[in-house]
Amino acid sequence: MKNSLKILGIIAVVAVIGFSMAACDDGTPKDAVDGTTWNASMEGMNYVLTFNSPNVTRSMTYEGETHTQTGTYSISGNNVTLTFVYEGDDSWSTTGILSGNTLSFENDDGPIFTRQ
Image 1 (tube, one colour):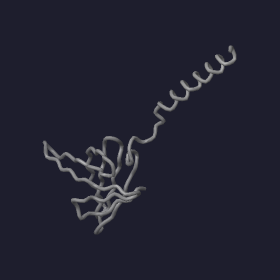
Image 2 (image 1 turned 90 degrees about the horizontal axis):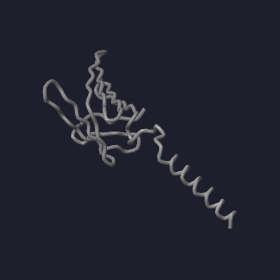
Image 3 (image 1 turned 60 degrees about the vertical axis):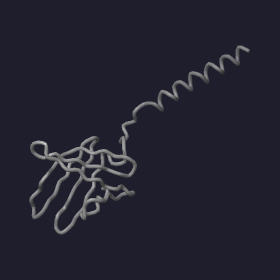
Image 4 (image 1 turned 30 degrees about the vertical axis):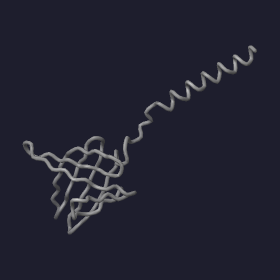
């Protein structure tokens, strides 16, 4: 009987430690795009999207001149919504569809981005 109680106690301790470790944050990204960079090119313009939850940076380079915008993003399933704010309260949003290593935007005839 004593041995059974010892074994049960050991199992309980191991289970508590195992569940505690499973609940810890292991530092992996929180969604499918967090911590990633995506590139695209179209008509001489190079685009880079960099995601660091909840922020996104969009860089556009044309003829050696680079323009950068910052904003936020949200993700739901395979839909990624980017929102950029300009001076004042002017902003615009676009929603893209994530499919494997590609990201394309449905409201835009723009380029298809590829995960780097």
